[in-house]
Length: 66
Image (cartoon, rainbow, N blue to C red; front, side, top):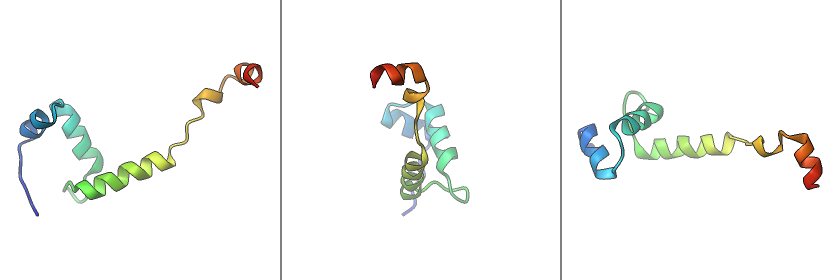
C-alpha cells in the first residue's frame, strides 16, 4: 500500500519536529523509499548490536561497588 503524506503533516500528527521525521526517513530508507517494517527491523538490529559499557569505565568505582 502506498501513501503520500507531507512531512509537515506527519510531524504535526506525531507531535514531533520536522527534522526528527526527516532524520528517521533518511536513516531507515531502503532504495529511496521508507517502509515501516524495514525501519523497525533496522532499529531492532541496531539495538541488539549496541553494547553499552559506559557504566564500567571507571575501574575504581567498579572495585568500590564490588
